[in-house]
Amino acid sequence: MIKFLDLHKINERYRDKLDSRIKEILDSGWYLQGKQNEEFSKHFAEFCGTKYALGVANGLDALNLIIKAYGFGPGDEIIVPANTYIATILAISENGCTPVLIEPDINTYNINPRLIEEKITPRTKAIMVVHLYGQAVQMQEIWNLAKKYNLKVIEDAAQAHGAEYQGHRTGNLGDAAGFSFYPGKNLGAMGDAGAVTTNDEALYNKIKAIANYGSDRKYHHIYKGTNSRLDELQAGILDVKLQYLEDDNNKRQEIAKYYREHIKNPLITLPQTNDEKSHVWHVFVIRVKERERFQQYLTDNGIQTVIHYPTAPHKQEAYKEYSALSLPITEQIHREVISLPISPVMTSEEVETVVRIVNEFI
Ligand SMILES: *Cc1c(COP(=O)(O)O)cnc(C)c1O
Image (cartoon, helix red, strand yellow):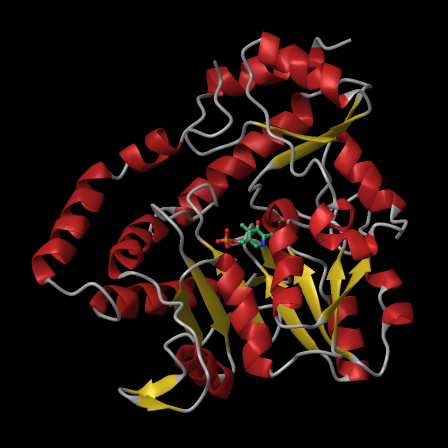
């Protein structure tokens, strides 16, 4: 069986370093807001090329805190791609803002910038881009619109740690970004974890306070905040794994290159990228008209697959107020996509097997 993602094998590679870091934290007797968070946030900001990074409890909180810190709320609209994991849209709803759903580009699966301007109103406050499946959004047109209409650009970078646009990494392509370190992400913790990155000192300080009970110093509360902090244990684990992220992303890029050069089947549409560095292949998403039959065929041949995602957010029960919306490209994507195994621990034999079996599908 070729697993979709073998998290045990991924973490096993760093067992010695993880063991000693976990022991160090246990021995320290200090479990929140300490040295591990200091080190990891410094290193993660360096990785992204931003001035600041702040560890938080998870990726959804990261996005939620950014919107909260900007003070966006009821009556405010936020532009967001319709084709995303529901968390992006939940972060907007949680603040009482209105998500304005935009169709993606069928070739990149990312938001289609040409469809944004017609949806901008006097109530629009921000454009939230999602670097979906690991591919950095082509930002230039987004930046131009944000400048023209005085909007904030918020990145959902939960799937794209290290992806680049014009020589800059995600997390450094807008006013603020939210990352997730859910275990299966390119940089994954051993539980829930997330981060906010930004170059804006005031915003950073505000989010840091909000995430810590609204407190800027002990027992001094300036906001009605919340509790969303990164555990020292997770920060230490992430700090160890961050050292290998670039290598791991390179391995994903090699596998993706091999898939894209060798999968040749008229029934399959391969993913497209603008350049090699813009995509870190969190998932390798292909499209197939007869998806169910294809997935069953792969299962029968020992290849595990996952669908990212089977139902579009506007077709979920939670968003029934959007159910009459017609977003044909988003809906087509949700009908046809299926993700092949891709991970830094796949062997070349496994990669070749996937190609052979996929090519033999008729
Ligand atoms: C994983 C993910 C999130 C949420 O991250 P959590 O850490 O699970 O809260 C948000 N947006 C996207 C696109 C994601 O893939």
